[in-house]
Amino acid sequence: MISRRNLIKSFVGMFFIPLLSSLPNRVNNVLGFPSSQKNRHYNPFHPQAKVFEIHNEEATSWDYTTERYLDYINQDVVDDMVDEGVCELTGLGDPKGAWRNIMSGYAEGDKIAIKPNFNNINHGYQDCFTSPQVINSVVKGLVAHLNVPEDKIYVYDLCKKIPTELVRDRIDYKLNYVERLDLSKFKDKVRLRLGLHLSCANKSEIIKMRNSIIDSNGKKLTCYVPKVLTEVKHLINISLLTNHIYLLGSGPLKNHFGSVRFSNGAQYPGCLHGDKIEEHIVDINLNPHIKDKTRLYICDALFGVYARGEKKGIHKWKTFCCKKGTPNSLFFSRDPLAMEKKIADVIIKERKCQGYKILPHHYLSDYQSQISKFHSNNY
Image (cartoon, rainbow, N blue to C red; front, side, top):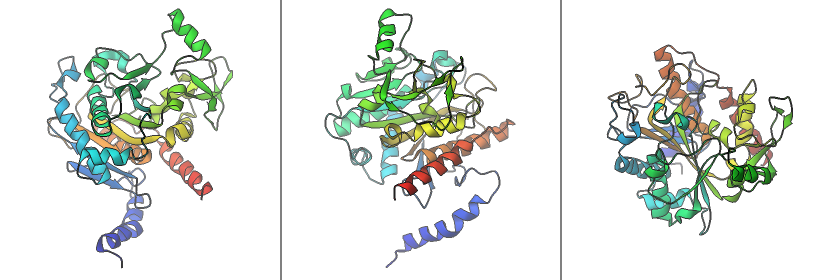
């Protein structure tokens, strides 16, 4: 016998969602702009594809004038938001059960990687990047509820140095940090040449790309998975609510540009930009070390960026559902495309309000198409 709840879900899937997809100025069935503290975005054909927003006005208290904005993030409130987010995502009533559900494949001794977006961290407090307080709350969940040893957790950004004052001093745990090698130092030059560091390429793990990747000298490059990703069993992607200078959004999919290693030893993915940037994003995220290992997607929307490339700094929002122009939100999902659509919906609305053009976002439909092909080929 079909329950009333399932009957309603079937009705929504058959009639309501197709109707929404025909409306103008929407992005692939993202269901509206958030209007409450907990907002759910469902794809009825994929039970994992939902996004939960946890909003708390007390998460930050920055006035947008003082420099050290990270000092005005309330760690205790962020801890509560992460606990609430994982509970909402799993439908379970306590954080311990929620983390065990999310990390159901975890076994003692497994290594776990966390990939933040530190793309603009070299600008210090002048720009926005994944908040260390959010990373700290995630690590707290892993350590407190799964008993993961701190030395089995790896925070990595292979394109940037991870500053002590901005990040490491704000995280309460003794983690492993995997960062860009400093090629002004002889030791790091040797590490890169011999592949002796977790930031180096695992040359037995190639990332298949549909298009040729060419360096500035016109030489064709091979893309590799870094050793940090081949050594870990699990991955948590903590992206940032931000647009990109070439694209609509720089969410969990674009976050992995910094995970690619190259046959010429380059540490920055400049060669992935250009006309094929959107296809490159999709191809990278189809690699099994990324696609199959990621257990959780969190988007840091405590502040967020909607005008990267148009104006510098961190600015208040006009359209976000908040009181003082600061989003004060975290988004949670198990599906990268659902998260990307959520981010796209929010950024589109703000950029339209602010009078900025809507940047390309074909990578959304391309990823959906490629994932559909993958599932079709495996059934």
